[in-house]
Length: 302
Image 1 (cartoon, rainbow, N blue to C red):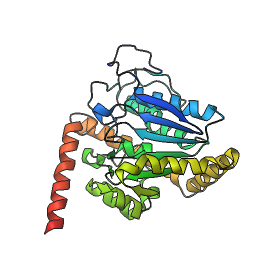
Image 2: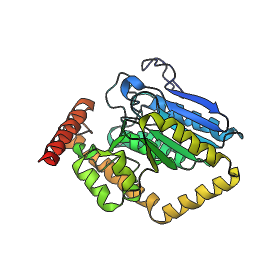
Image 3: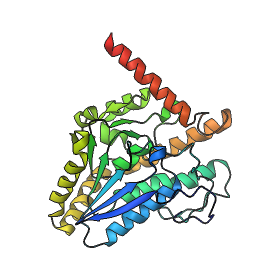
Image 4: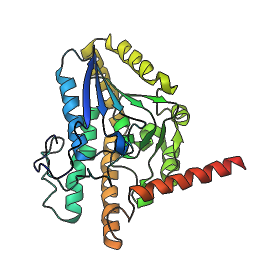
């Protein structure tokens, strides 16, 4: 339980993130396959530790982020036995007070500015090229993990969505949608909650390559090997140059403004309903996605 100050508060699932060196490539793998690699705080801090290890290893040129099992990541953990929003961790990404003893919106803001928005921004600034290797589900919080990477290689079976508008919330905390999808695609994806395929993601410019499932690892590592031959400092400066231009196009300030709307929605839900998630849970979110997919398939068949 990396960084936790309350041992035993959640089940011990072993290594929820694994780390491997393949020559100049560090492979960071989310390892909660029984829960489709849902992201709890244990995983968040384990990811951060693995990324830090890769950054500090001078022989690592490229970092690959992967998910063990059939799915890359089903998003934030909102319903597994390992959900640990009630556990205190040492802040790494944001200089803010701890969330645990804070009430209401203060608690939610303090936690999410650290484990979601703050961590994703921290990882986006990793000075080494990062590649997300995506198969199966990449949903909501899973999108955040993929989007902070510089490149995305997707298997043909990969599918993506951000369905949190079903909760009455305008997208996940790391609100990069208009920049990675374009404004109109972003609105469609958010308004409908529909899943979109790897082929669609490639067409929209969100992913770099789509490959057969059985070729995903080989293609990803071949790309990583090619990048690894470039000068390390040159890669770091190039990454910083592109990120700075993206920020000048409004990404950072836009994300700040939407983070406020995100928390306004949480507070509204808590005030008028049962909880800050609009009464939704993992099962109802999954059921909604299934119904939407079935409806879309029927419409296309007509």
